[in-house]
Length: 168
Image 1 (tube, rainbow, N blue to C red):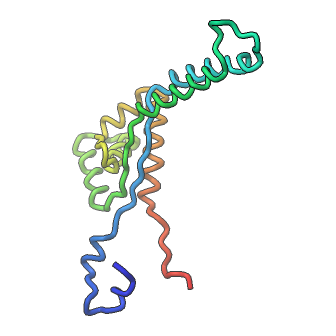
Image 2 (cartoon, rainbow, N blue to C red):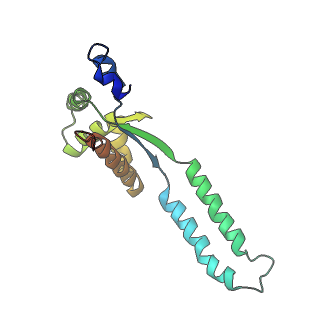
C-alpha cells in the first residue's frame, strides 16, 4: 500500500492496512554441546603456533593449513547442529493466555512463569514452558541458550522504534 492510498479516504481500506502490519520477529541460532566444541577448538588452536614455526615437519605433524581446515570442519559441523528458533512478538491476549495456562498448570515460581511466556513467543519450532525449564536447568549451555531466546524475545516484545511522522 502506497502513501497515495492514504490520501483518498474514499478508497482507503483501514482493515487491509491493519491486516498488513507484521509483528516483529527474530531468529536465534542455538548451539548445543558448547563445552565439547570449545575444547576441540582450543586443542587445535594450541597446535597452530608450533605448526607455523616448524619448517622441518614430520610426516605425522599437521601443517597450519591442515589445522585451519580442521577448525573449518568443526565450525561447519557446529553450524549444522544449530537449531534456528524464531520468536515473535505476542499480542496482549497471547501473553495473557500463556500466563493463565501456566497458572492452571500449577506453576508458581516466577522464573518458571517467565519460561511459559517465553515459550509462547517461540513460533518455529514451538516450545512448551516445561521444555524451556528443562533446557534452562540442563547445564550452563542450556541456560545460555534460554538466555539467548529471552534476549531475542525481549527485543521483539519491545517492538521496533516507529517514528511518529516522517522526517521532512
